[in-house]
Length: 181
Image 1 (spheres, rainbow, N blue to C red):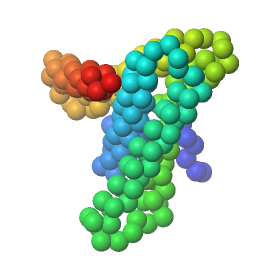
Image 2 (image 1 turned 135 degrees about the vertical axis):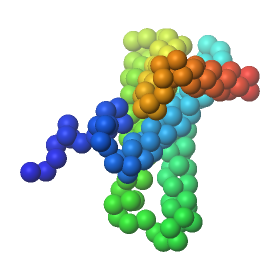
Image 3 (image 1 turned 120 degrees about the vertical axis):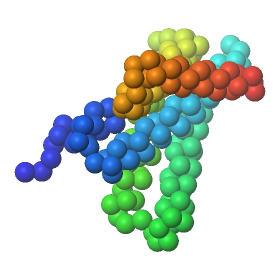
Image 4 (image 1 turned 90 degrees about the vertical axis):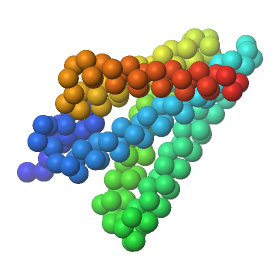
């Protein structure tokens, strides 16, 4: 009987006996989610500082194009890296994994897209939509960091310390993005 989606390990619930390959693939997916999240955050934080004349559709379009661009760059990077390391093109299975990694990272955009579509429809103000989207993206980063830290097997206080460092890096990234604009 083929495995159902519920039976397959994913990013958030790998079984304790997951293979090294399953762990690597989950790590690949989480890495791309982090890139997509930081890209969306950068766009929204930068645009949010541009005053009251933001057009919600333009914000949505800019965010989508930016995130898709970063994910396509990641796919190209994976392809080149694979060819350098393995001196061959990826197999069909490996290429499907690369595409899945890039495409699944788009999931981080669900809340921002919904909020910006509500702004396009006039249901909420564009700045409200952007604020909710920014908070959702930051929460997403915290969840991914928590998943990663919990898998380390470190003592509780060390997990907390590593999580604090990761969160501090995230805050620094957002601060630098804000400073640039």
